[in-house]
Amino acid sequence: MITEKSLKEIFKVNICRWKTAITLIEKDCIITRGYLIEDLIENYSFAEVIFLLLMGELPSKNKSKMLNAILVSFCDHGVTPPSTQVARLTRSTGSSLNTSLAAGLLAFGENHAGAIEKAMKLFRNHKFM
Image (cartoon, rainbow, N blue to C red):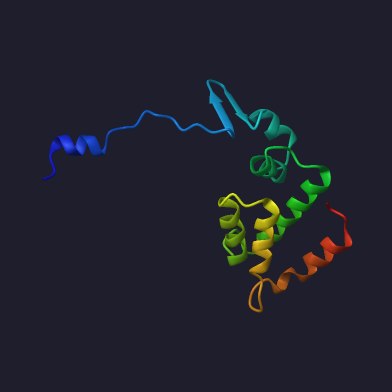
């Protein structure tokens, strides 16, 4: 039987806070991977901050350009195409960034990613890494 006491127990607010090595939040101060959020906002691109979040360090100029190119190439579909979902899910398992990217690329097939050919030619002809 549901009682008032059991309902209060179910909806009791848990005051325990999550701990993470990614972000430290204190009064008037947010630090992400050792960088003040203001510094990240003012001096780094979205792609560089994504790399920082995933890898724990800022990328080299070439890696930043490559990640930015990859993120821009997603703009035609958003973040919902199957290959993108596979890459994201693979990364969430703790697999390396390279493995996750490979998983996304392996999801390409006859009916998906045909439009990527021009981007692949761009990557092949430029040294990003």
